[in-house]
Length: 590
Image 1 (tube, helix red, strand yellow):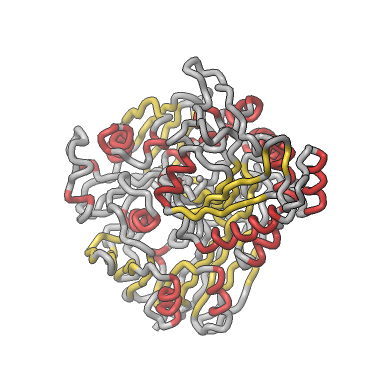
Image 2: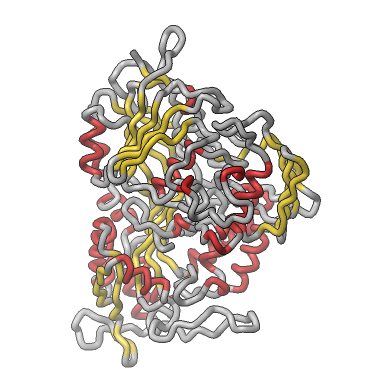
């Protein structure tokens, strides 16, 4: 699901803020994977680069049979919002949900593709028209109270999401489902309103134990289970939660893949990045996210390994194509494109191209992201290599070309004050940023300097997150730095670029972009018969070229995430999409 800093409320990548991850959520791919991991039991670490599609191997060896015991302590940056898997999509809650609840499909840890490994679906069949999927479930799986995990749980979960009473952040995933039919306890048939190539991604939400909730969904939001889930079908069972301190899980002896060797998993709540690093180095944490500047602290750290991987997130400079004083919906009541009064400056494609040539993306990646990012030419990320157009490059950093484009377009600094004018207009624009993101502040200062150097007058405006969100979604801005996180493994971007989602106040097409050809391509890519990547790829490559040329966003960087973790445990095979996919096999070294 895309977080806004693409999952809205808005989620930030790195420090972005939490938003579209609520709607689009976690997970996308791994093309650039750097695994800094030791190959033996010793505390020393070494670097191993794996490119582009690594095969993980165990990173510890212990003679004899691994023995049960030990606790793994991992950092989360905030309290979980809810232990009910359909009521929360924040990062902390989702990490805990993954340890407690079964799901129809799960992501392959290296590629991010959804499949049957570690999931309830053993196999499935697809109807000729692509609309109906029949899933055959894994037999013999039970909740920790002995009740069977079956198709009733899946149907109950998705029906609960679809009911408006739950206000689930996953309603977008369930909306395309037309019907769910229980064929028998181990067979479920899902029919979509139209054929969809992202069907498996839509069906990834963790299941509720239906026998613990009212059949009419009346207690889904109020059941004690939401804050004290006493049963599980995952590798661990909830034990306790002390807000602001930790969440403790204990091993599930009934786990269908075998009881974990690990006795407990503890989620320690540590908001401060510097403190998380200190605790990792002190041996009080076993795993934590890292900021780019912390990586150098671990180069010679004994007993610490790092996993760095491109993630499903990117940052961008949003360009408002319409008049910010009079936002309008993208469609008329009849469903036709609504004419948009263009932005007096940014509605000019030549001005946007000049801006793109004036910004040094590679310099930003090096100096501000500290190399833990990469330049990005368009909307599809290299985590979806079959759809990603590797031949497409960002517009070259060339301030002289930017000046020439502006001059040829009639933007001249007639009064020699450093700001170009055309008719009665001048190149004065406001650049909005959320005030809680130091990286965005540094990027904004760089962009301001570089655009002003070619004749713009950019004024950066830091705003409280709530104000920034209202301004961005309300389409009352000139330029804004933000990002999407958790965009998922499928390249479909319908929420961002169609006129139907140009809704001031709520829609994600807040740049008021309109392109009939692109909307056709999006529909074709999502409903391609057979859904084979090679058949879908041409649609997404043309989409990338269109967005590269039209510039509703200036794409700043794709994001690399970093994780630091201990070498005191064996059996780990961490992947960028799922660090904990085989957690039940991990063992602590003596």
